[in-house]
Length: 143
Image (cartoon, rainbow, N blue to C red; front, top):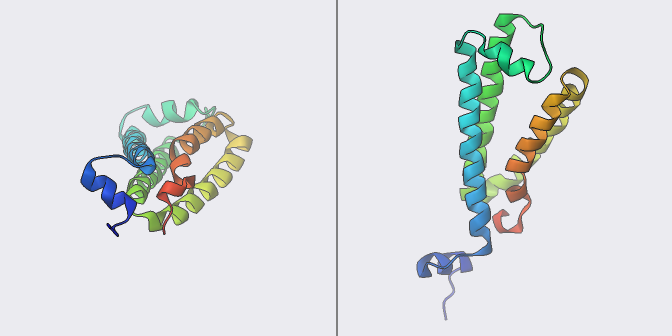
C-alpha cells in the first residue's frame, strides 16, 4: 500500500491529476501578467507610450510625468501579481492570500475606474478572469 499523497503518486507514474491543468493555467496566467506588466512599465520610456496606454482607457489630458509614473506603478503591480500567481500554483499556502489581494485590487481599481475611466473596468475583468479561477479551485487549496 502506498501512503504517498495522490499528487505525488501521479507525478511518479506520469499520469495527471485534476489540479494539473489549473496549475498550468495559474503558471501561464502569471507569466502572461508579468510580460504585460513589463510592457506597460516600458511604455514610460517610449515617447507617447504612456499617453497611448491611458488614452485607450478613456483618459486624454494627463500630465506626461504623471503618465510615466503611472505606467511604472501599474506595470510594477502587474509584474508583482503575475509573480505571485506563478508562485501560488507551486505553493498552495499562497492561494488564499493572493486570492484575497486580487479581489481587493479588483474592487478598489474597478470602483475608481468606473468613475474615471470606465473602459479600464473591462481590462480589470479580463485580468480577473485570467488570474482568479485557479485560485478558487479546490485543487490548488492548501491542505
